[in-house]
Length: 344
Image (cartoon, rainbow, N blue to C red):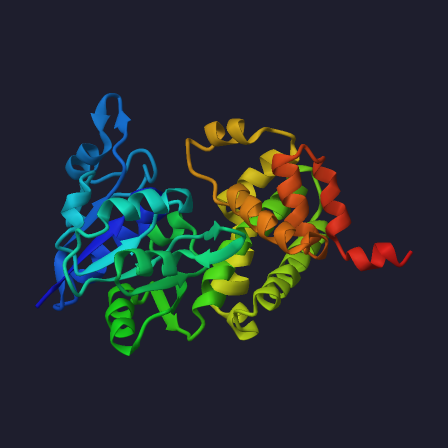
């Protein structure tokens, strides 16, 4: 039996992962040599993006400088996922419920999945994991893979790492073998909550880092925000009673936080916010890319507010207020060693 692999998501990161896996499966006898990549249909000069990808082997909207392997087949038809053995979810977290509900009840038995989605499910005052939502809704196993992965660098074959969790021994071997290579090195840890929360919360911190950069701050100030953000991630673990501190030293932790602050899309969005540019304008400037950070900041803030804990997370709270409540960007300064300020 060969495992048929399908990727749900064809943005810049989904396409980069499709390229990685398409190259890997050609050397793996247990996996079908074709990778199916589902994406929401868009049109470039009235030509469907799926058609452009399948004929030119370039995702001209999201990774225009990268030539893709010919064994990637793009589709906009969710029914083509029905016979998949492995599903890789790489869609913006805002679209998870809609996509998952459309494929519910259509998949064959025995399918396994892994989520690369950065975000959480906030509902009825509580925080839930996207991987758990996928697993419970589709009644399939779903692990999570997070790491310091800038899409263009993965696509160019720069050596990268990933942290895999939420899988049993059999599933772990299947997924790890699919992703693991000389240029993408996968570690498995037993901490689903910790891995997924790292990948989520770092987007809020990278917004704060970018806001500082956009205001013209130096590295001392920006890195102070990063450090305080890491503290708040640790404290959020404790608030939930989930996650292991040692996970912060995996690729999904400090590495992903650093690369997101230095070069991620939320860092770039934060730079614009620091220059007092609106979120709508930012989306246009970034070519329509979905921003994970602002919506995540809102969800985290609403959770904290519901628990009466927002004052204990000044950076998370301030990033939300700058994004949605017209707080001035320089309010971020009060999030740097706040106890030192209050002691004066």
